[in-house]
Image (tube, rainbow, N blue to C red; front, side, top):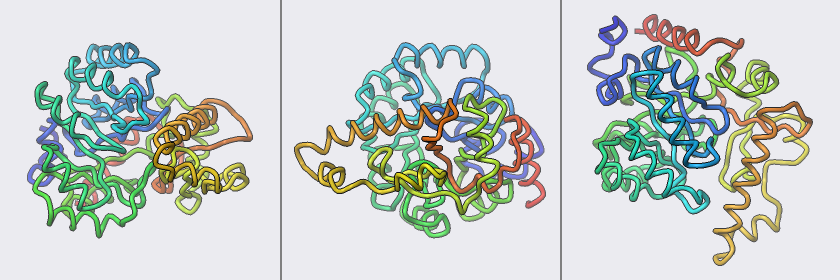
Length: 328
């Protein structure tokens, strides 16, 4: 057992649940997370997850899972969008269970079906939550853990600060709570554990890494911009999502227009409108992530404040461990 594991044995539930050395999930990031990043995460004592939507087909998803398992022996997960905007959801769920991944992270919908099937295959389920009401709901459904998405999270952020959300969830629920949002260094990890979290989910600090497949411009943006440059937009998926406030984002605005809001509220049309909005938004992110264009929409969270240069995954994790030890 590594020295760092001894420091946190009694606190870090995530380490016990997944048999890892350091209680960090490299958060699933649309278009950013890839197999190489997951392999490096596992090789350096943490775990990670990839959005199922990073693969166009379920066959590509299956092949990716198999390649990771062949390359490294360690736990990793898949992030599932479990609402009706994800037309591949049921097939993705089936493939992941058949391939026996270690865990799911569910987002933007009811995890009931995912939890039921996962229990039959020995796969753990962590559910993104933003409030106590939903946390109690997923616990009652049999979730293994809660990912407490606070207002500093990247991507689809919650409305509440971590210092309010984690104690509230601890008081209301008995399953492990993982903190997601605003954590960028080892001291931040220790602070979350001291507050009652069993581990953390960190994403944005891993965008500007050598293994990330995105453009150099995207990585440079994470280095050059900071927390003050992060804004929420509803234009990408209909749900508030954090992006870097580039000149293009400033030009198009961050709120849906009158027609978009109207369609989003129409009972008969909103399901399809949400799906179309989601797909259009994801294509916009994809174009920006892999090419240099004026029409740039880069998704990131406030924790890019801690990103000062492009590093390897190993260097980022080593710095987190070092900072944790120094703060302990």
